[in-house]
Image (cartoon, rainbow, N blue to C red):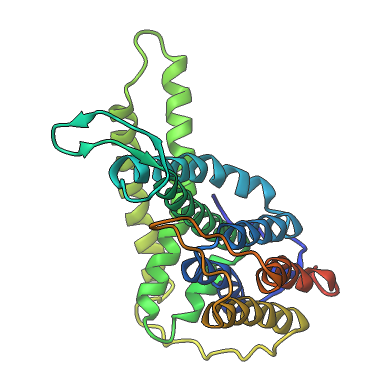
Amino acid sequence: MSYRRRPTPLHAARASVGIAYCLAPLGAALVFEHPLVLLALLAALLAAGLAAGVARELRRAARLAVPLALLVALINPLLYHEGLTLLVRGPELPVLGRSDVTAEALAAGGVLGLRVLVVMIACALYAAAVDPDEVLRLFRRLSFRSSLTATLATRMVPVLASDARALADAQRCRPGAPATRTQIVRATAARALDRAVDVAAALEVRGYGAARRPPRARRPWSRHDLAFAGAAAALFTAAVAARLAGAGAFQTYPLLQLPLGWAEAALIAALPAAALLPFLDRRGVGR
């Protein structure tokens, strides 16, 4: 997954605000266990990805996230057998003991799987909608050389992938047995080392090793920065305040308790609304 600038309000916001906007639902997912709240956070992330024009990238991330979430949801009831509602009475296993499956353990596994899904989709939204170069520039005052190294490394990843595809295509055109993956990786690594020497020489000629740190340019806050910063603060504050107030206190053991009152309904409706409100103002997104 690689970042590409798009004419959307999220792409127009500064990197620090984009990071906070993607971290807010992730933090809320770690605070809450209520499955409907987690589903609301997931819906907010998917809707934000659609509004930011990165739905394709989120679908690609979901191909990995959904199987992992299902695996987590299925492992919990197989390894943890607490709960009063017995669904399946399993056999006695040598090491694990009885392999009973309870509704409470299944629900707890589903909550863990939903958390995994929310976390991975939030990370995918960050990777697709926040400029990595601007993120690295945030840390250049702390370590200019580290930022430069990280920038070059992230830029080289797509180049190495392109080299590997080109080498694989060339090998398929040759007669005889096709090259193995080990041979392709060895050839790509050799080209990467050669390219690293060329890049180092070019940087040395341009004086990167002896250059002073550039002065920090002060960029005024735009309407999109304020909107997404406010949305991030609203998302996390609403989740923490509702949790401290006792709303959405989902309980799995020893018996399932799924509260759903006015407080839970208001929180479930407020989370996607707060995430989508900054996308309504599209002025200046082309810059």
